[in-house]
Image (cartoon, rainbow, N blue to C red):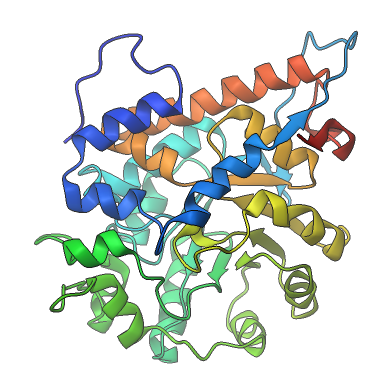
Length: 365
């Protein structure tokens, strides 16, 4: 499925996106690219970074730069984690395995989606770096607990609980396409519980039907405590934008939080994540690591997020574009582009180490 790319054609993530959108079949292209409703939040996630300016310093020795950090105590060479994205084999036959290999080679963490089209055991076996598992909680708590046990046994080192999807946002493009997984693809880790198929009902998205039928919309803060009671893994809460919710997550035992609006795919007109980040950082007061996703398309975006208090950023769509264009090599290209841009931005900002980034560097336009 991947495109034939001439040397020098891929300069930045926009090039990867352009080639990927041209190569993907419409149903996969629209599934990956779309947001909910009018896609206002989808666009604003990226536009909000453009509204911030970097007030760089000069005459600082930046002959050596350091991009390393730690996330939940895990050292990483790149402050960019691979966000959980579903159905990666729609982009390339190697899917999540290719992504895991590329993430490990880049020295960072892959977060595997519950909606993976590859078995968790196959992903962790292929990975040379840490793999976290993004979790949806099913109405069938027994099946959920069995899934948690399985990902623990496979070697995943953290759970990332998504909390912004009691129902699936209305993704108009998927409704029009009547999105469903094609023959041969399924939610591999739920096949044993007869929850692996995503079929298109009449006139709607098959994934929306899957969520409404199988996933639990009755979750409360108590369920974080329930999850912690059945696992030895740290639990990261992903999908909040409010400072008070971040504080509640810490109070209920979360080991980290991800400021996220699901890539603009859930509640349209929710705030851009980079705008929500500073208040969340202040609310947790250093008690846990704060991460952010949504709209990151440049190394300067990463620098802005880290300066505003994020420990790391998560990227999703750029990884999918790389996967669609060239499998593992394409994901490696996406992460490499970001690493190069972050390194250059640090030098030009007069900040040799990501650990030294601070809020004084970033101001509204």
